[in-house]
Image (cartoon, rainbow over all chains, first blue to last red; front, top):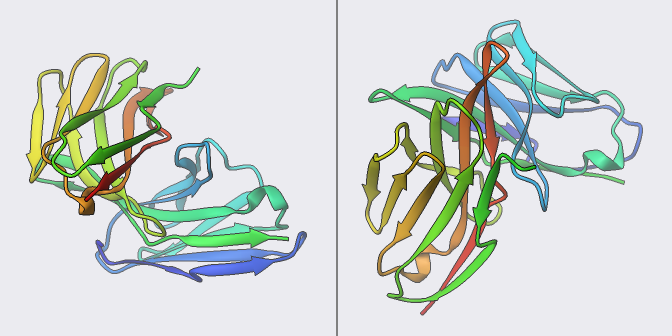
Length: 114
Length: 112
């Protein structure tokens, strides 16, 4: 599992409340990613990080912000949650293995916004 | 238009009945095609990376192949434990960086 944990694993919240999801990795990977997965869609990239304090937007970044103050932690924040942000969120890291770039995913966080 | 299309959306097989899943792509300058397995309630599990047409990789009952327009995931003599959703993703250059796009997956069910 490449040492990736996500917290919380499940969360129910109300529209308009702030929510922060945490991704923690133990193997000093430089690149970290946040995706969302919804029925009828492939995994979609929200934001990614290529180092401490270095982040960039993905294809569905509206309504989300991220922070990476330490190599091991990548936080995803929904400043004011909306029902459209109900989804399963996955964190991922990437690393080179035997010359191949491989991406490894965490277990996911299921978020429900009422 | 989707850049990555997986077919079929769902596939039911009997144990031992070999078949193939397809991932077609329309991006230019492919920098890698990835296959993942995802079990319900879990994150995707990396299977293979393919980089160039003609490349093949194998792992147990799975073999992935790549052409200039598509990839196949061949499943030989599947077992019930091979039941999962299989995801394909492609990496390609865009605007000075790289983009990774996922298909919607093929849900495979293998009946005993």
